[in-house]
Amino acid sequence: MMMKRSWGIPLLLLLALLAAVAAGAYVARPGTAAVNAPASAAKAAPPPDELRYQPGAPQLGMLRAETLPLVALPAGDALNARVVYDEDVTARLSVSVTGRVVAIKAAPGATVRKGQTLAQIDSADVGAALADLQKAQADEERKRLVAERARDLAPGEAIAAKDLESARADYQQAQAETVRAERRLHQLNPDHARLQDQRLNLVSPINGVVVERNITPALEVGAGTAAPLFVVTDPKRLWLQIDVPDTMLAAVAVGAPVEVESDAFPGEKFHAVISQLGQSVDPNTRRVTVRAQVDNPAGKLLPEMYVRAALLKPQARAVKVPNSALVNRGLYTYVFVQTEPGRFLRRKVQMLTHGAEASYLGTGVSGGDNIVTSGALLLDADMSTRAGGAP
Image (cartoon, rainbow, N blue to C red):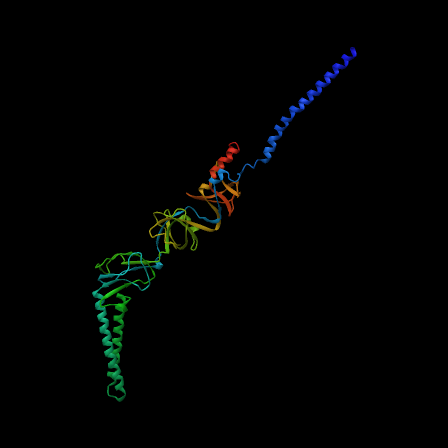
């Protein structure tokens, strides 16, 4: 009886120990899984400056990325400029005689050819010049016949030598008078071959478009008329008058490119080339007028428009981004670059110049990068949320 009790107690202790070990092992398994789970999650998490979205994620519909190239860096802030006619392809037509407008052949906006009649003016001055020419031509013809007859009579000594010389001199003088009368008429009307009575034909000396017309039917015109009667020009070629501070003259050179923007056409760029530098500084504004030739193939720019002109440095290149692509955090500026569908990297960039609508970036991005231009702040907020608010 005593032996049965001595064996029963150790057996119970052994069973209790085994149960405790089994229970400990069971409790330890969940704990081990909880410790290992964060390590596995950390291994799968993207880098702190990277965001990934699954295809079809709603955030992707609010983003726009653009492949932006390297462009010439501006020498400074955009400058005020004024569009004017290109005087090399502009004709301002007036008359040097007094007369009355009897016919108008071209309306404002009309395309005209070189030599085309724009208006006809009845002028007594032209009539008098035409009469002088006709008289001179008749006198020249009469004296030509006299000179020829004297020449024919000279061999038989039927005429004195001095009379022959006199006939020749009279003929030469008559020729000179005809030339003078022709030149006088040509000055009054370069298209004198088409004169009708005393009507002067005002013709276009170039191909172009009538951009101004300052005459009306029956208007009295003359040398004292202030405004030109017609202005004809090629609207596809214009000049730009740029006011450049004297402190920027070192960055200005003939042939340098200029980027032009107009509030009338937001987001559209026009290209110009510097053609002439001013030779004096305005003492009041400390600025120099620089001329540039601007191409206007679509005719959008108009004379007397005010525009903004950025002088470019062809040797210096940078990536130009709209300011909507920039994310500012403290002293640093960032952009987001899409490297593949749904994958975005945040990059710290060097801002070279900052404008009202766009900025030029140096290090941090390269030409050809697919930069997020709309929705960058959304990406930044999402990145901060995932990182617990850390920048």
